[in-house]
Image 1 (cartoon, rainbow, N blue to C red):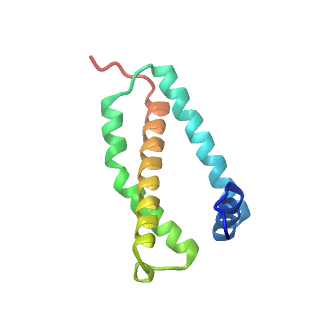
Image 2 (cartoon, rainbow, N blue to C red):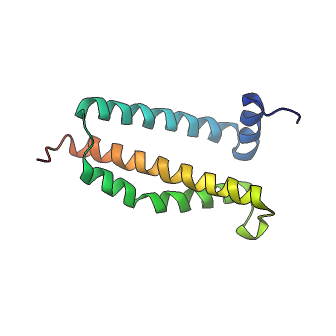
Length: 118
């Protein structure tokens, strides 16, 4: 692998997760993102109460993402080999935390609707 291209990254992710699961995760991410954007457009502001609940869910999402990736790759924390592995693991945790926060905020907004906080 001489160059890091989008096609290479897609092939690596398909190899790790399997083709069906990888594309299902991509589809879910697109749907959640579109739902989040529609909630933001509909409400025209962010609810700080919903945002706080979303932030409180972030550690759960970070841990879940790390556990999920380790289960899919059949690895453990003891298998970390160097600084690059730690950086990748922190990136996975950060993406899991952010994704969970967006998901929680979106679900709250879709269930509860727009609330006036004045």
